[in-house]
Amino acid sequence: MRVCGVDLKASGALLAIVSSTGDGAIHIPCATKRIALSDDKDAEAVRAFLQTIRTFHHENAIDVFAIKSRAHGGKMGGGAVSFKLETLFQLVECETAFANPVALAKFGCGNLGGIPGIILKYQEDAYRCAAFHLNRAGQL
Image 1 (cartoon, rainbow, N blue to C red):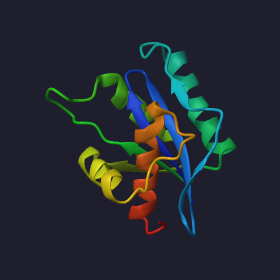
Image 2 (cartoon, rainbow, N blue to C red):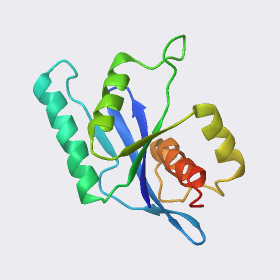
Image 3 (cartoon, rainbow, N blue to C red):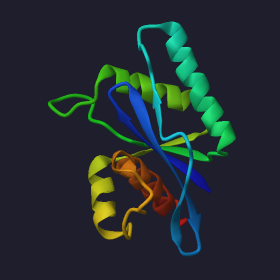
Image 4 (spheres, rainbow, N blue to C red):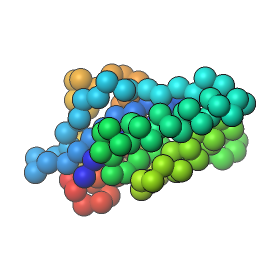
């Protein structure tokens, strides 16, 4: 199973593809590490973002998008644009799963076994999301 972890930030998505092997999670290198939405108020830019996600999904044979959840309100709540991006991921003909940030942090402390060295710092939460989903699905 190939899972793409997604960490939504401001007006873009940080991505990391992870697959399961008999020994655990393995990062699948990919040239696309981030997809940005240029203008969330421009319908053409939103359609282009959706098409970019669809192309990424097809080219990388993604089975599941695992998205790090954000709070709906309060001081640490996610912004409106990030929820728009989340919806665009859900529109792709692919399973979408969500990971609670608290459960994700707990999983990262105990079960992950470290982040691979090729993962960039800004991709770490996306990687954890994907590995968390693989673990929850019984693949790790």
